[in-house]
Image (cartoon, rainbow, N blue to C red; front, side, top):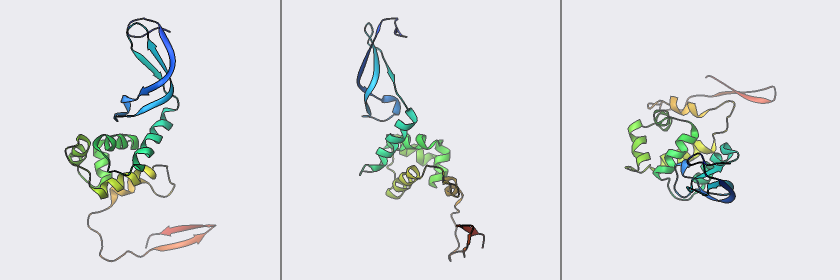
Length: 162
């Protein structure tokens, strides 16, 4: 194989690779195939099962015991597949606040940090509830709880409007 930059020969190795394309500092992939040009030093990497890698990164981030930093917030928003506007809607804030979080100008509050972690943990599709429901929560709510009607039918529970 030849280098796409200079046409030089590529040498295949399995070496640690700094994954800067993730947008996160310090992500290093171990055991991946790296082809490095003997002439110009350019590197090409083969990353298998990239969706699984990105999911693993997201879950590793939310397990850390410290508050999320700006690069981590941006990575998780993108992993969730949301624009800044969509993310703001789901978080119950403004796009400007999301921008400030992602640029590191303002720290995310502890409740918002926890909500983002919860969103990442529940990202697997669930038949009866999606994270899109978060965007429909009204700021003003009744002071007393709304009644619920629940029915056991054909081996499962069903919720009915009160």
